Amino acid sequence: MSISQRHVRYGKYHGTGNDFIVVDADEYVPNRGAFAAHHCDRTDGIDGDERRGADGVLFLALEEKYSPPRVVMTLVQPDGSTAEMCGNGARVAAEWAMARTGASEVMIDTQAGTRHARRVPVADGDDLVAIEMGEPSFAPEVVPLDRDEPLVEGQLEGYAVTGINTGVPHAVVFVDDVDAVDLESDAPPIRHHDVFPEGANVTFAAPRDDGGYDQRTFERGVEGETLSCGTGAVAIAAVAAHLGRCEDDVVTVSPPGGDLRVEVPDDGPAVLYGPVAHEFDGEVPVTPPAAD
Ligand SMILES: N[C@@H](CCC[C@H](N)C(=O)O)C(=O)O
Image (cartoon, rainbow, N blue to C red; front, top):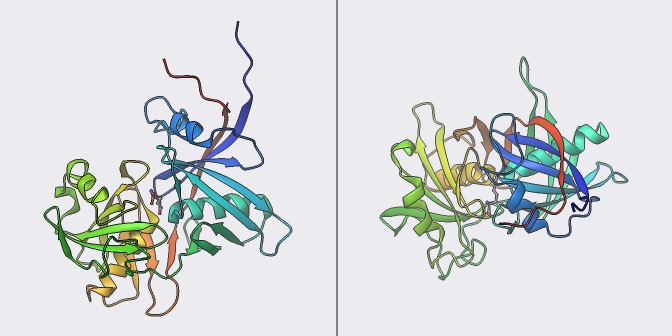
């Protein structure tokens, strides 16, 4: 005998390929971790136009009474963990809220702080969504690091690694060619290294002749490579500025899924710009089927 299942509606979005299932937080999901683990699965998860599954579930609570409107964002990752911040996820949250309210700017409440987001019209192209990202920090207690000094190009697992927090911890490594890195084997020992007591996303960057950087990131919580990572793009720009590797305070960072623009002023918060796409909408069971 089958028991009828309650379903929840969702929207599927991506920001330069970093893709998310968006669920209105008014929809009661009793076990958000299990929901994310099941529906984000790349083999058995939600059936997308191009790729199954997703990099995470964004539970979004819209507070329309404020001006600009506010959104409380909770990112639940495929391993069931909750991330304090997500640059591309926050841009998706902003697009979702701006489409619902007609506003062209919103405030996003994250565990890393409240961030201002706005739509940026682009001549002859799709609008960009810009999100204020706070001030990147190298401070050991903020990254966090299991030592008293910042980690700047310290030797870890055969790479020169810099630890930085851009809302979440990143281990940034500069290389000549990101495509020459075996991410699936080289990133996990850094991601789980003792120096990062809460773990770290591992972001490789290679300078290009045009002043921009190529990016590849192995994400904590996804436990694999994603097509884009916004906090990682900001981490590259901030570490490059810190090491004197870039002259401009506006840097184009290119993960596999597209181009992101990052502003890293000497004082004040970083800003991340990029496109957001709404792929499709659907409904899924609120309680995933039990594993065999
Ligand atoms: N893809 C995100 C980062 C998400 C959080 C990360 N996986 C973590 O656990 O720290 C982005 O665009 O910033």
